[in-house]
Image 1: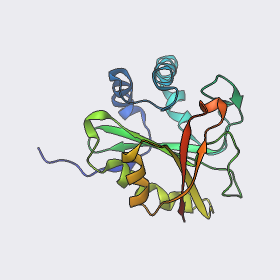
Image 2 (image 1 turned 60 degrees about the horizontal axis):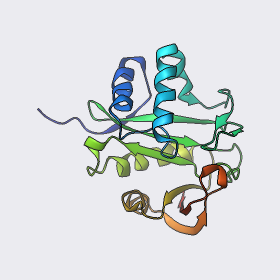
Image 3 (image 1 turned 135 degrees about the horizontal axis):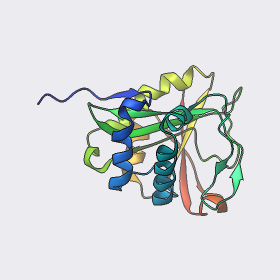
Length: 190
């Protein structure tokens, strides 16, 4: 069978079952800090109202209510959206959030962009390609740059960022709400 090219797609009802299956299989999480808990929360939202869940993944007006941080605290939502990484089947997701009118982010937001690839699709360059496809969309929001963070030992993610022109800005400790661990902040000029 010929492999379909990898692309970013807007989440849709006709692809939702593939996303839910990835959440059920494990190893892929919508939030890499809250991991299993975030997967269970999204599965519950899908079961409650499939259409509302899909619509919530594109929230450019930040109407979706507060965000729950890993420590359980709540903070205001930023405008943002997710795209699914697709090659004929669900491969992962990439999300983008921003503060209108500035490249700066509030202290409770670790970065503009986050991504994850399902275990069976890792090592194929999908995250690198997904980030490359998303950067022109981020540019349309008028940002001078985007910031991404990685754990200090997450070499695959660091390679993705470097391949897309990222530069290391700083080593820092995440806020206590995010666990307080050491992390790296990267910047990609737009």
